[in-house]
Image 1: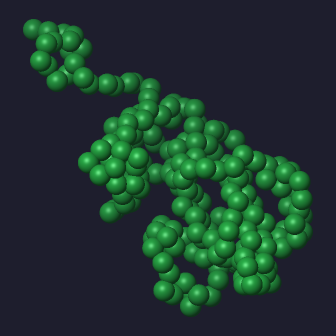
Image 2: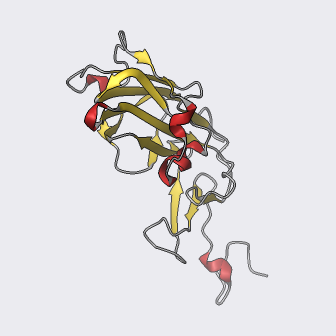
Image 3: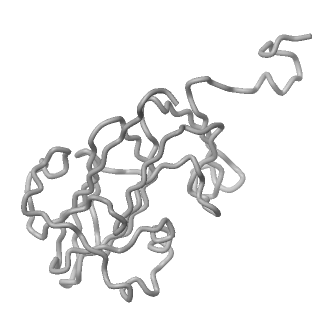
Length: 211
């Protein structure tokens, strides 16, 4: 009898990939570059970083930064330590600057979600940062200038906590906003902010020992 990992001609096990340390993610929806019917596989190391999923809606244009670096993807790999998600919002016509965000990781896939991958095993970690649900989100309507405000450890003196917007303002929300609200996040704002808003969302990642 062949040993457990011995390759055998015409045996499907010869194509199997496994790791005692790494976790295999399987993205297989129409949202991935492979398209409908395709899939993307990705190995992650749960001892190195937590793979966070970012969902964000803003009223107006926004620049988004993670620890000072521009965010180009909805996937953020966060290493252990202090982090900050920073946003610079610009809204035309003097309208209120509002946003809704969800930055999360959980071993449990949201029911009906096509945006989260399947994993071959649990990581044993979680992180849940949602606007309007206790997340540490502060903002200012005055341009702070420079880059220091995008980084962890910045002095937030004078910045104020964002508050949930009136529920009526969320009515008739488009698909993009609904995807964020479905996570339990809420639309938040700085009540007197018009035209521009600079925002910091701070959180910590603790990976502990090996899962």
